[in-house]
Each structure stands twice: as structure tokens, then as C-alpha cells.
Amino acid sequence: MLLSPFLMMFAMLHHPEATSQNTGGNSVMKWVHGILIFLLVFNAYGLSLIIENAKANERDANLGMLFYYIGLGSIVFAALVSGFIQTTLPEYFSSDTQSFEIFNRFSAILNQAFAKLGIISFGAAGLFLTPALILDTGTTRFVGIVGGIVGIALIISMLSGLYLSVLSMTVLTILIVIWHVVIAVWLVKN
Image 1 (tube, one colour):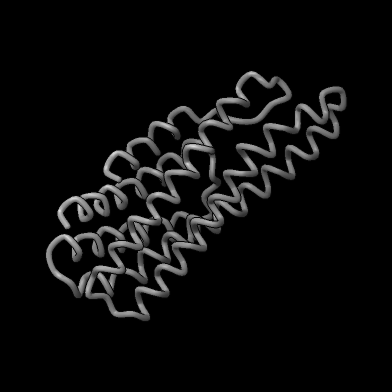
Image 2 (image 1 turned 30 degrees about the horizontal axis):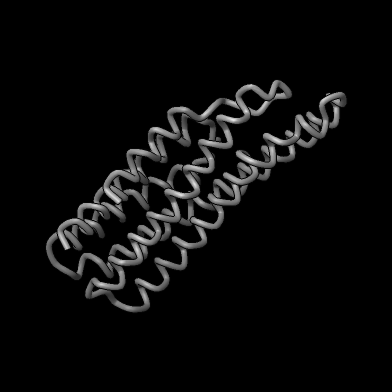
């Protein structure tokens, strides 16, 4: 769990800019998104262990985890679109550049929509988990504080209309990684 956030950053730093009809970089896209999906699910499990073991207010914790799972599903769907659907488009439209461009653009729109929903849902999760976790002591309280700060930053980034480029998504991933490192430290200590 402690290694997982750093693997997320490693994957994001190898994220190609875009899918093209030249299939060379598309296999890297598949690997990057496959790794990110696995690690996000793994991190969700770690956070659920904290909530299960913390002296958390049931309703706040349940609402926070609901937002986290909505965020997880949305980000996984965005990663599936970008990493696995967009990367197979060149196979289907190798001789039809116009159709490739249309479907590639539509895939990019889907990716943006679900990634933004995921980021704002992760932010809401951080905010709704904060009260439940800061009522506890020690590291659990720290997880709540960091989750709240990350949550506010994620929500503000989406409400400000930020376009999710590879660079901006990497920066937002850094925030999520910081939160997940704190979660991992909690797991190690407990």
C-alpha cells in the first residue's frame, strides 16, 4: 500500500500526450491506464480499512465512501476509455482518418467528463470523510485533515473549469497520492 501511490506517479509520468493513428505509443497508454486502474482499486481497499477501523461517525463515513466509490468508478471508466477504447480506434479506422478523428474526439470528451466527475467525487469524499476521521486520534485524525485539504483542492480545481491535460491530471494525481501515502502510513502504524 505504501508503494502504490509512488507507482501511480510513475505511471502518470509515463502517460503519453494523446492517442494517434500511429499505434506505437498506444501500448504504453494501455499499460499506464491498466496500472492506474489496479492501483486505484487497491487504494480504495486501504481507505475502506481505515473507515472500518476508525471511530468514525457512521453517516459521514458512509457518505464519504460513497463519493469515493463514485470517484473510483468514474476514474476507472475514464481510464478504460483513454487507455483501452481510444487505443483500439486505429485498428478499426486505419484507412479512414475522418472516422478516426470523430471517434477519437468523442472518446476524449467521454474521458474528460468521467475524469472530472471522478476528481470532484474524490474531493467530496475527502470533505465528507474529514469530520468522521478528525474525531479520532493520532494518525487517523491526520488522514482526515489531509483528506479534507486534498478534497478542497480537487473540488476547486474542477469548479474553476480546469481542463484535464496530462500535466494537470498529473498534478491532481500528486494530491491524491499525498492522501494515499497518509492512508498507507496509517495502515502500517495500525
